[in-house]
Amino acid sequence: MARSKQQFARLIRGALGEVKADLIVSGGKLINVYSGEILEGVEIAVLDGRICYVGSSAKHTRGEHTEVLDASGCYISPGFIDGHTHIGHYARPFENLQSFLPHGTTSLVASCDELSSVFGLRGLKLFLDEVEKHPLRVYTLVSMAAPQDPILCSTADFTNDEIAAALDDARVLGMGEIVSWLRLTQCDDELLSRLELASRRGQIVHGHTAGARDQKLCAVAVTGISSCHEPIRFEDALERLRLGYWTMLREGSLRQDLATTLPELIASGVSLQRLILVTDSMTPDDVAECGHMDHVVRRAISLGLSPLQAIQSATVNAAVYSGIEQDVGGIAPGRYADLVLLDDLDQCHVREVRVGGTRLAANGVSEFHGEAMPLPQDLVCSLRVGLSISDNVFKIAAPRANPEVRVMQLVNQTITSQRIVEFDAANGFVEASLYDDILKVAMFDRHGRSPQIAFGFLNGLGAKVGAVGLTTNLDENTLMIVGSDDADMALCASVLLEVGGGMAIVDGGQVVEKMEFPFGGIFSIFPWQEVGRGMRRIQGRLKEMGSSLDKPIFALNFLPFVTLPALRITPRGLVNVKERRIVPLFAD
Image (tube, rainbow, N blue to C red; front, side):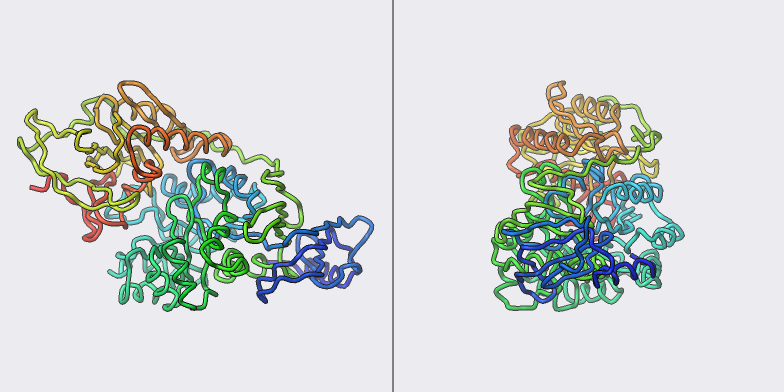
């Protein structure tokens, strides 16, 4: 952040004791992420929200009104940075930030995908205004997932002029993850033009190189894409480190990759200076149960990373990569006084959190009581699908009595394969089968750019359910209904459209669970704690109905994600990911 000569002068005079500090912290053990030491007998002086002195005695900075914080018995850490995440779904961004604050997270690098995919540039501007209302520092990336791929997806989008205007906003750090790296290796003109916009401005671009290796991984790196958060194996992480990528390892709600990557990285003895720990998204229920970046640090320590290295990977490494190291990431003169007091280093137990020197959380509770901005009312309950909902909408006419159908087979919670299944359609329609664990999938277009509804079938969810629906799905964020009964699917769709979006489970003609996300269909207007309780109920109900998946709703959430293997669905139809094309439901 640019500072004036007057601000520099005050900090200079503060360091010399000519202007007295607002805060002095003494008595704790300082975690110095720059030198890799834990230091005792160090005092920290804070003026105007920034650190002006770090040394053996801050006595010269103490004035009549200086607050003195005795940190005896604590480790003093820089505030944690989540170097790659998403905070625009389930709970509103302001509420998500409230949930993170007591866990030592003081800065985030967030891609504005959800609001952008629904509302385009207006959604990005709304996100920027929303996060400004909260004291956590949010460094925003312009979404490159709106859309991921214009051939396959049906979302709001940006023009190149809008991308340029967004990158020129002082609140924007750079460009969000380029998910469709296949487009890039095919020299897609639109992507190259947008990379050029970021390059001219010297701004970072996050990568998403799932599945890329060798030549293709090099082809992505030559464009200036400088990070990847997709390593799921040791070999993936090592190759990216060796090729100069800032390598991000996730331990969030949607993916947990530390166990399969970190121990072997540690054992290999390679330098971890370019390792960054991230969440890539943490839902309110998981924050309530596990924490946020404190949880990621704890998990890394439990897998063999030293506490100091774990904290470096969650602070200074992310700051250096993001180009914000003069503001955050460490405890040193000139940096913001974003401080975390830890009771225990190995367990990373957070006692107190200060942002800009002001205490904002203690003992697991946020003490920030500011209010979020009013949400534009014309965007509330704005989800539309352009057709009347009835049982007949969900009927799929069969071309013959025994058609062969492409089915999305769940390999795990995020990955699918393609199965060809012969259906009995003697009645003229292709139906779901609870006996065979095959559910019908209906995807609706909310932007009027595709046929109004696309159909698919899913195997492997395991839940014996009439219908489950959600309007938060990567990255379409539109109405998707999955089920076994057309009447239940119609009721589920009607319920969600009536409240503007959310999640619902319908069975036997009854709504058994419902969460309302009236703002664009992507987040609730209620406090994050209530959202977390609702998500636990819905995940738990699907497991009670027979799903063996840890978080069944996330398996549905990933179905439209057109850059993970192998068969996906968007409002444009079924997607063959490897071939980057729409394929018909019927295989013969």
